[in-house]
Picture 1: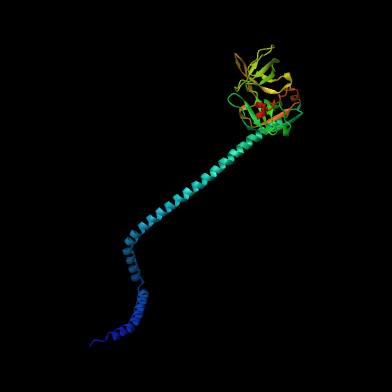
Picture 2: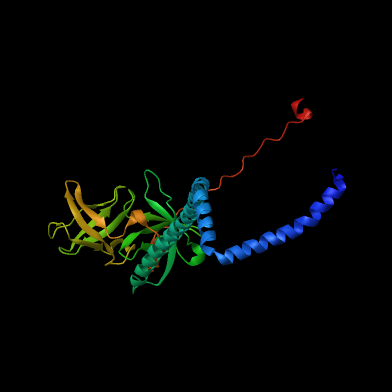
Length: 297
């Protein structure tokens, strides 16, 4: 007769645990008894599983390689962005440093060119090119409040650059020696011949009305003569660079096309210049009174 299911399950439960314990003990005993057999079994299982494990590891390795490469590309892109930003900042600082270096060099040149015969002088910065197609002039940030006046000389560390023609309270206009309206009495040092330096809006003004005493030569130094009472004698102006039919060309010592700072010098001669005529104010026009009706009648 067959046992009921409940009794069968109970018998299986009672026998399962002892059987497992006996099996474990047998495996332990056999492992202790013959380790070579179990090692051989493990080796066989490893050899059988190796192709499958190798096949599974290849896609995983490829995915890992792709992930690492993508991560490296992202890191490189971020580094390039950071380096580009740092390079832009360094270029900005480089431009600032170069400008400061140029300004410092010009200011050092002005310190070396402080004239001994000057009554006073003011260092002014060029703030605008106030000239145009037919005028060579610059504007500086010094005016009547700083003590400058019309007619005073504007020089650089190399030589004469021009003179003040218009002066306001906080700014002034400097007419450069290359301007068409500039006329400066000069002398050629080698021959002591007097002349007039006349600008014509070109980089090299001409020498006109060269006096007797020798023919100007290329390389001769030109300085102010002091005649006319505008500039004192001996201010460096330039050097003769070319001999044209219209007159020798003079290369100015001052780089008038690249002015950054100017030394506005008062030699005590500006007071003798004629002052500009004051503006004439016109009287207001009188309006005729309206006629009343009685006068019309």
